[in-house]
Image (tube, rainbow, N blue to C red; front, side, top):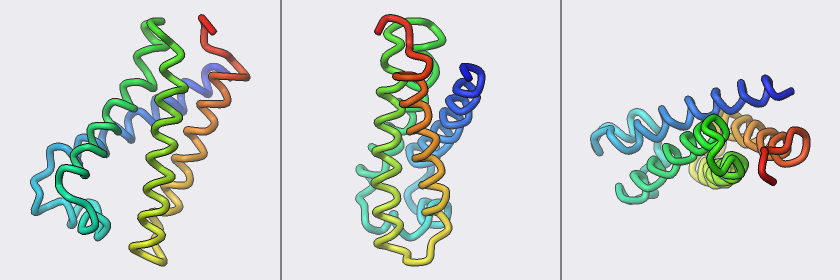
Length: 128
């Protein structure tokens, strides 16, 4: 089970790292082409903030447990990313009624919940 949780964590971390880097470093005029119409509802600063939080969440999924420094931050990062996905689901549902991105958002939310439950209850992080 521990290996499965690590695989999910690495997958989520990679996915959120890439998504965050795109939001932070992509030029403003290319954001809608790459990310969709939802970016029109947010300022550039909000999009950069979301990207920064995704990058920090990706780091938080891996480094605390890997380095064994405050490993409790791993499920906390998963909670934060799950909340991010809840916001993404709400935004996509409001902006685009028949949007396949909602399915991806739900899948990422479910994976984040699996990490939270797995790291808090099934295979608790050391130091709890």
